Image (cartoon, rainbow, N blue to C red; front, side, top):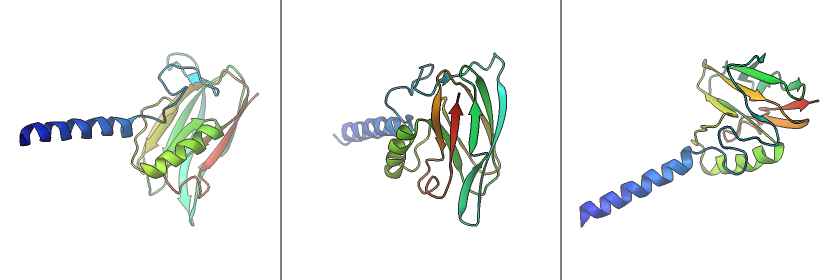
Length: 160
């Protein structure tokens, strides 16, 4: 009986871990899906390089740059560098989606993202996101680790 109970507990734990490891969820977060802010890029196709540095200093956290302009239809390769002393992430979405996801991150601060529109980096590490901006509009990128967005770690992408 104890073995069966243990196995059921292990299965429940693994299932809940799968939920925590999943990305922001909701429409538009599957791999290859088109969203309101575009779709995952094709790393084999040309992309405009844009470097984004993540940092914290004097109690403020930031992305440099925190405003990026893109042409509709353009593919961008974001080269991310965490120059800070803390983990940071960049999550690209609509402002509404990022604010909603930030609430989920408050409940699960160690949530890992496995989505083409998000990348979490340890201090002094680098990463990249390749994204195709297929629709015009203003979109958000934020660090959704609890407290980071509130400390200023947010930016805007304007697609014309």
